[in-house]
Image 1 (spheres, rainbow, N blue to C red):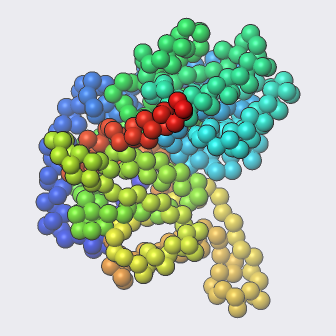
Image 2 (image 1 turned 135 degrees about the horizontal axis):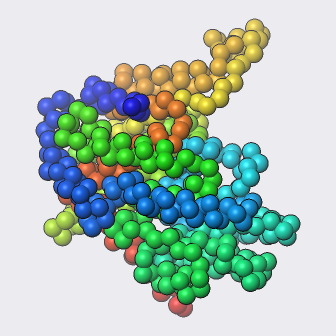
Length: 439
């Protein structure tokens, strides 16, 4: 089966072979642990590796999508934040494109992922115009805990909007996605609102292949079977003890080597605007999973990788000087993608004096040439990197990428000796916020 092309040439990665093999072999016990978890489905902290294989979950989501499509909505608003929507946004934009709404689709989508008053007001105004025209909208509220401040605040706003125009039937236009038994789940059941359940042991940032992502993505036309097939394929690859074939083990080992040698910044440099949100999703995955004050034994260690995201070629004109000339504290993953479409330059001889050798060539060829030039410059200056090439912007390959990265982070958590599934320090700001709100 065709797969994403990953190049982890150790010379480009600036890692010695013996050290690389030594680190990689340390992950064998964790591979066995994940293999065991595969047999226990949702009962362990590694539950997320089993989500793509949950056929019943897929069938339930697809049935609900078919039911809600009968309402013929013209817009859907996904109310969530962090792990409750970053994965959905990443897949949606990678497949449907960043200009999806401007392409006048049958169903537009809006992500209410902040309590920025101007932004939320704009979404409310857009949706109210739809309702005034007699159109229908869907509200998908996603929060694992059911008590996320930003999500619940926005839910109230959009709930009131729905009630104003759908007085007796507003419940039909709401889908709540949360943990079974959460306060929000109880509210949904009490008010006869559809509730999709997130498996208890599946954390938010690992939940994109659960109803968290599947419902909105399926509603927006994403082929869910292909998406999950890509994820399943990568689970099998990345839980293999044949280490040369295990992409996640190899990338985790290289990233860990560089962290231990002073490169505590990992940059995901993406040469595709549509795939940029995958970098933003991965940023949360790295930050929350590895940035820990305590190790598994409870000892203060304060470790973590700082994740950054760069967009090619845009950011070559903003941070390239830093990357090429600044401190050697970065390790880079380049991602290139075969485009769906292409644009060719006309042949204008008079323009040859401005930039040579681009007349009559395609935009994608120019992008590819620049990406190659960047990597060659990194090679010559011994700036460490690995490369990923996506042969087609489709669901299968996107499913592979997301699942690979989730397993990579689990392996890094093992190497760091931290729990990659919790985020205890996030509660610090939440506690202080509650105090301020109480005043």
